[in-house]
Length: 377
Length: 195
Image 1 (cartoon, rainbow over the protein chains, first blue to last red):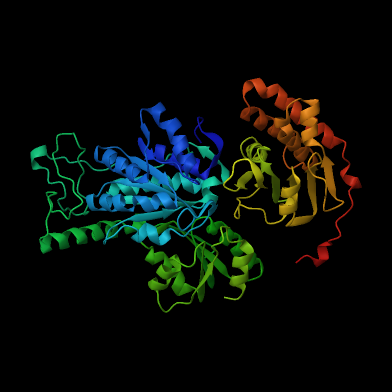
Image 2 (tube, each protein chain N blue to C red):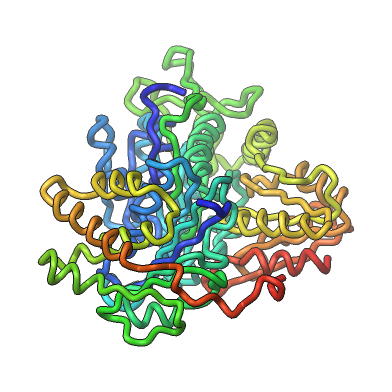
């Protein structure tokens, strides 16, 4: 361990800030909203001290607009919000997907719809993260379950955004965001930081959206002499609007391919006690923690239970899910909504036995509730 | 600490400093001590009044579920929070109440100490009632060392309030030392009927 490392008691929200800064984030624009406000608050204190930029915008529409602009100029960017703000961001989120602008949006979920339950947790924005903005589009959605996760997955979120030129939604919830746990920072072993690839050709040879083997074109900073056109209209390799069916088809397929190529590193999950499991819980976010306790309780009763924690929600980690679905005679998808991600799990293997446990009253599912279901799976 | 997982809940109204107290306890255990800790809180949209609770789980192992399952210790700083959060208790758990505001205790196992009155009358600052209470909680429960607690308190408060907070902490510890835990009645719940 490095001698400069120190132990801190941090909230999940604060750990996200530390992770973002460790990943090289230097620009934050946002509008504070419970339960995500600590992220904006801490960024406003930290960024100016390290030559970064913090802007409190007039609303969430402007917030995501600002980070898209800053990212195009070369910055690693972040905004943070909760349900109501995330709804406002959907239009520009689609713009970022279309223009392949790397950015990270944190959504610390609270009860909805509308202003809903500002101080209570929920996981009901899951499908919105995937399909909230219109049209077929690539997006990465990651989910955190602890303070340690909040730091590490925030770093990973930036790495994936930069590497694949894609918006990444980092999903937390009121529980994880506000829970304080001890964490050693900087970590004993520093985490890898990935930067976007910039063009290596002279400016006059630069084709901004040219296909390559990875499907991820090098990205020139605005103002660096590489002139290019950025538009939300369907565009060709040169960045200009097109409706040519061949070019449109090529665009969509490249969007799909770039995330398919990276599936191995984009799709993360963690298994607990799965080796000999006959039944399993599938969970993400704060519910993971109740599930882990429930699985230990079931083990004590002689039930071969396991847990699959999903860190990546989208693209759906099919390989990890399929393996658990094939191995176990039944799985239980526990989530704090009326049954959203369970549909994705069922779609992975339609012949498997997938049960669901849902709570949507503003409280975390208790270990007992999951244990009770596990006993009768 | 004998148990593997020790669960503490603080209840009070907004402004009584119960979240601060919980954060300090968590820092004492997790940063200045060598425990795993999880500190959570729940509150309504209002910032003053109402009732709020804060919880600290202290464990020798990594903590899964972050909330209280069965409280080992509950500090209630006012009546509404005592009434609302007095459940999920370990049979021989510690109930500590601020007798300044709590008139009705639900069990004869309760320990009543006038934290707010002590803060107001002995130290001249009502705001340190939470620190007095924290001193008493740690002294009575023995969950963590008093040295870790003192470090955590002093690291949280501005330099000019250090002495006041140190006095508050010592006042809480002294008050708690007057309590003889051995004289508390035993729980009517026996281990045998617990599953």
